[in-house]
Length: 94
Image (cartoon, rainbow, N blue to C red; front, side, top):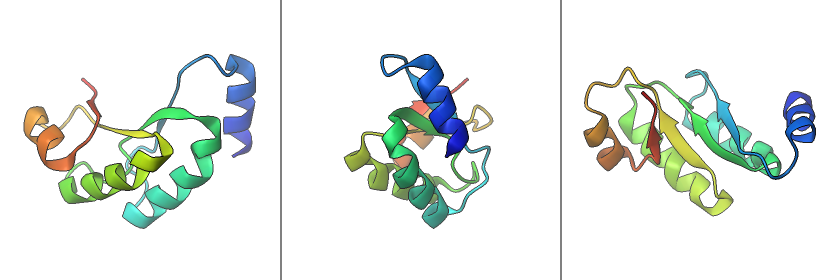
């Protein structure tokens, strides 16, 4: 939280902030952490959970809609259009 506050203070409120969890959370952890980090107004969270967990990404994406936070998947997923459709993710980074 401290690091996010420092970065947001450095870049100011008008700049876009994107976050990356590096596949480090399970679904409940991702929703919990991003709920706490919502005050920093991130555009998205990239790879909040395992890239193989399509349904997990969908659950995270749905949970973050009210917070205005999108979900981005990693570039290692071979069928990006299918992932976007199935998981309702907002971005697929390449």
